[in-house]
Length: 142
Image 1 (cartoon, rainbow, N blue to C red):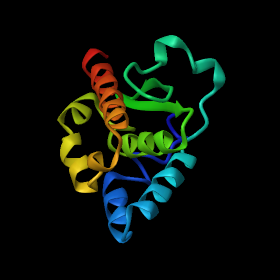
Image 2 (cartoon, rainbow, N blue to C red):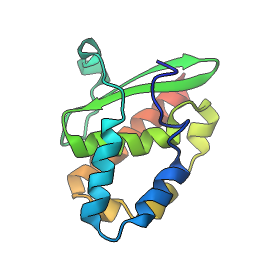
Image 3 (spheres, helix red, strand yellow):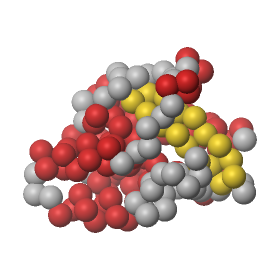
Image 4 (tube, one colour):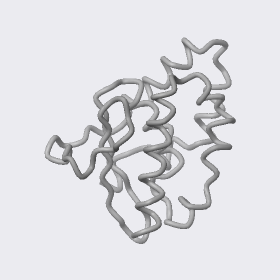
């Protein structure tokens, strides 16, 4: 799993902020976010279990992880295209990181730099925060 996903390595938070900044309107930005989701590795169906499901998301979202050389590598999936893209945005911040890097990263400032949350429905915004909360919990307890 550690070498499969480009998020956090070749697709960074800086890349996403810069690319989203090129687009003039949110329709183009949503297309880009959906394209990000297409770059997520496909999660094996056997990992889509209840214990990996994120509560509080409008769509179904699963998060699994492995630790390799003290770094977290996440495997994520959703049944909604836009949510897969949002997962890509989150993975660019958290994948291939040490636990303290995950806990120290200011995700709210990142979302603000993307001008993201105010362009999501309230339930999508809550789901996004639920994803972040689960990842932070994983980093705190591992």
